[in-house]
Length: 343
Ligand SMILES: Nc1ncnc2c1ncn2[C@@H]1O[C@H](COP(=O)(O)OP(=O)(O)OP(=O)(O)O)[C@@H](O)[C@H]1O
Ligand code: NI
Image (cartoon, rainbow, N blue to C red; front, side):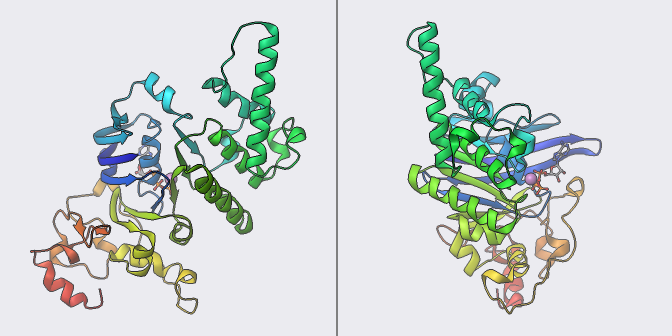
């Protein structure tokens, strides 16, 4: 349903154009949950926002395609975006309070999404029809509120955002996201601002929506452990590039890229509780200094001569791909691979 081909997004800065997203390829099949995972500044949000047409200046799509149901969204006009955004593709943001308007009742905020996209069409234009329309919309909002687990929705309809807890506010956002029955739901760190038990409840809710409605999802997170539990497929991003992607169980059980291996070692609870937590040394490379070579080199325990050139994606098997010199065939890296032994 969604295919991202060679997508490149640049930000014009004083130091030149920064490629926040650099020749990214991935796809989402109907009903699939895909995770975009990586440390802060890797370009996850930029990649996600482009699928909603929300890249703002100084950012710009400089290459590639976003194919949604056969149509390239990268060339969309503002009007074409308005028809898709919220209706076909919806998004849940990290911090509910930046999305919700504190001055409006939450019921009306959800109803507004229905009105924007005329989900319920008025048949004739009289006061009675308008009254009926309002009633129908309210019914739909109450159904949505029930669906996302808000009890006593008739009363909560009249409440203001600050009267809700963080977890409940996130549920309201999910209800707004679902209002038009989108086929693709995007979520940027949807649980980062919540405490652990609430996090699990929100993820359960999203999982249930995925199962019951077949809604495809892309979830952005820095937490590989969360992605492992939640996503069917994972794409690991580093410095604007996807460095590894594949079905979640393959990525978790047999990670190939030293960066993915590093991320896994920093979350021992999903593999082995007795293992020591080892954070990846160093920080993400300054994107203005990014050259042609492997961006992870400076932090990589296996870095060698073969890493000083452009590295392309290597197919480990049909579903599993990695961008690392250790696995490139026909290069001097095969010696490196032997040296790395255990990989
Ligand atoms: N408005 C901007 N102007 C210039 N550069 C930007 C801007 N927004 C993002 N960038 C650049 O794009 C890079 C990727 O940013 P992005 O927000 O997509 O990363 P992220 O992986 O979502 O990180 P985080 O986990 O912190 O949200 C940043 O490191 C920064 O260099
Ligand atoms: Ni982000």
